[in-house]
Image 1: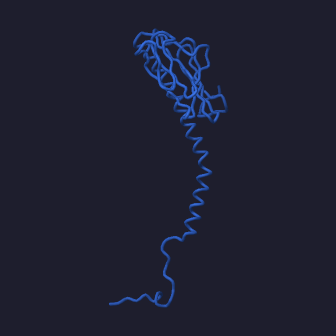
Image 2: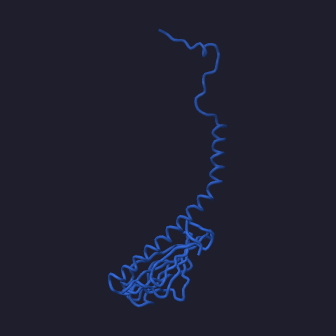
Image 3: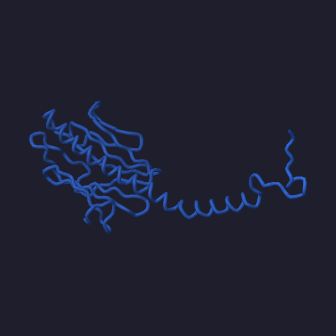
Amino acid sequence: MRVCNKKASLGFAQQQIGMTLVEVLVVLALLASLTAIALPSFKEFIINRRLENRAIAYVTHMNWARSLAVSRNQPVNLRISGGESASCYIIFHGPVNDCTCNAYGAVCNTPGNEQLVVVLPHSENIRVSARTESATTRINPTQGMISPTLTAIFTADNGKAIHNISNILGRTRSCSPERPNFGLKIC
């Protein structure tokens, strides 16, 4: 049995399948416009999350350093350094000025003193600096107390900052110097 399509035989156009070039170009232009609008906000979001994660990791490392000092019954030091291509912090034991860190890692006069080195390359858009009399703070092994007190300032290239303030008891709290950012109180 043969079936005949009357519309096709009467000269009507068949239903179009697919899209025309103009339709594709319009959709691509709309996608490009939306991407151009959203990209700066997305970059800002990534930098803010990176800043927040680095500040949280620092608090974790500070708590770990306190427990390391108490468990080993040895003083532990934390030193914050900055350079042209990176900033960093290092947790080490031994003499206070024994270790420093740079873009390539730790430099210690006594090998094996370093326990943890965190390097923040400037390409990551996050920097760490210290607001204290000394770049090194010492954690006492008997009670986990620190001297001198330390404020580690994590700053992003977009101007946002998180301050991690460690008091003499070794407890660290986080705050932001601007309007409440990241759910933190204002410093």
